[in-house]
Length: 401
Image (cartoon, rainbow, N blue to C red; front, top):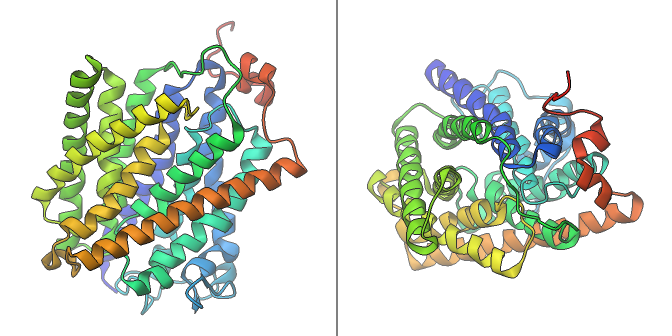
């Protein structure tokens, strides 16, 4: 065990943990005043529910002994059995296994909250918590095993450094299915008008900070690979932000503060799967692609009238999807053993399309099943009055003290 690597991964794990409240502030600042607390709560409660799932079976299903390339052995590590301070010979051999458990848990915790910006105001808390549990078990955990736990995609040579497929593609295409299934809100104006851009800015800053742990931590040790992933992260962030604002100015004849924040997140989502496979100068190109492709995706969904309230599919889904494919075009073998080639490109394209379809179909099935056993959607009246007041009996701002 390396004390240096352990220190580095403790910091990276804490940084990824901070991303979930950061996401809550980001989404909370961009939503209406009447439903801020519901948006915040959907992020925060994920830590509780997902952690319990991860302890009691989830971690074993994701990283336990492979069963037919499909799933891990649920009895492995159940209730934290054999998850202690001794490193694993299979996963991150230079840090305590319990730290690997915690780092991977933080990835799992943030994935469903990423989706909430798309279906804002369209799930009640009972429906959301049920969806959170089922989606984590049926979508995230199997995909995590396929890619990172020794499943069939990894055996085919498919790679995803820090979650562009496992996290962003699954969340992005899963939320698209939710948008279709839940339908448009019955409101005169479905567009979200930000209630507090300062809160959104704080959330964006927390996401920036956490993303360095998100990507650099994918190396599992404090070394050259972590440094490269770290550099690629802020370079793509900057490149994506600048490209997004230029695109907005040229195409829409204006840009605003939301464009600046969203462009940076698009760059981060797109660099995530490829952060540990390219030299830093190529991260500029990744950010440029993100700023253009994700903008086009948002314009497309707006033209189609999809009620993706905060553009999650266009930013996270398409960003992660695109970055995963770029591995086949830009990867440098000297960085992490993966070379850009036609064969690698075919593997990346096939793998990410399969995962996107899986997440889309399973999300639709989960929502369909839940809708048959309980009411998962708030009423039009509850939405109009505000979910904070009607579902939580709370308000963000006490205007009448």
